[in-house]
Length: 147
Length: 142
Image 1 (spheres, rainbow over the protein chains, first blue to last red):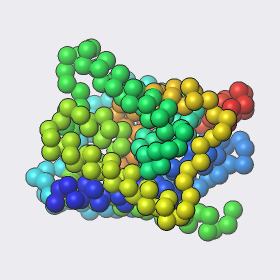
Image 2 (cartoon, each protein chain N blue to C red; image 1 turned 45 degrees about the vertical axis):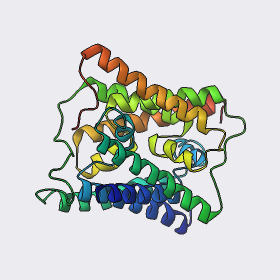
Image 3 (cartoon, chains in turn cyan, blue; image 1 turned 30 degrees about the vertical axis):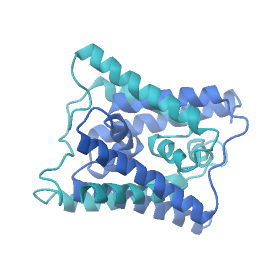
Image 4 (cartoon, rainbow over the protein chains, first blue to last red; image 1 turned 180 degrees about the horizontal axis):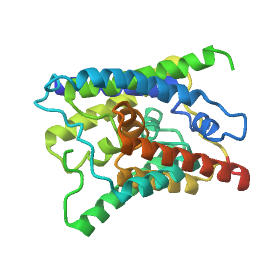
């Protein structure tokens, strides 16, 4: 059952991304490029998603536990860290260059013959892996512990 | 812009929010794509399969919509492949360092009124807007 709801949630997420136009980097960049025939529609994507999630999260987190697991893994508010701002800035540069954030990057595999897929996804995996390795090397701790 | 042009993005947003709600309600987990990618390996076998199924679902969902609509994203003819790879690397490092991306901080974080996520969204959105301007209008790459 846990597997089924993961698959189902992913499926709805993917349909939503494509319906929203997020899978088109041209559309994403038309939103980010505020100086040139600005396309504000992605504000509606984010706004719609946040409103639905906020109502549902509020209601869900009043439960003692999720339906299929003993506890929530949503993580309490973490301590502040320098990585948050530096990382978000680095992500912003990458997003602003290519027009892909991680969800639409994964969704490229819906049409893997797209010539942009190998470069973008290869880069993404190298980026994630290099940070994971760097963190392990630096702290000796295991990154990716369950929150 | 006609009203109808906003309805489709809005409906897509509702689905993304609904999917995030479903994952929290049933599985107790945050639908953050960068976190799911980063934690895909190195966890237990059960968690690996769970995360893989979410990602496969995402791919299948996008494929279903694109097949139904009869349109697939069109690759840009003149966009340098090396620059695409660089952008992928930056997105990977940045979201891993910041512990979240557009979905984790943007949707789930804001929905939980997280101050950290609000800061993250403010930073990545403003940096992305500035970067897009420079790439398109200073270097003329699009």
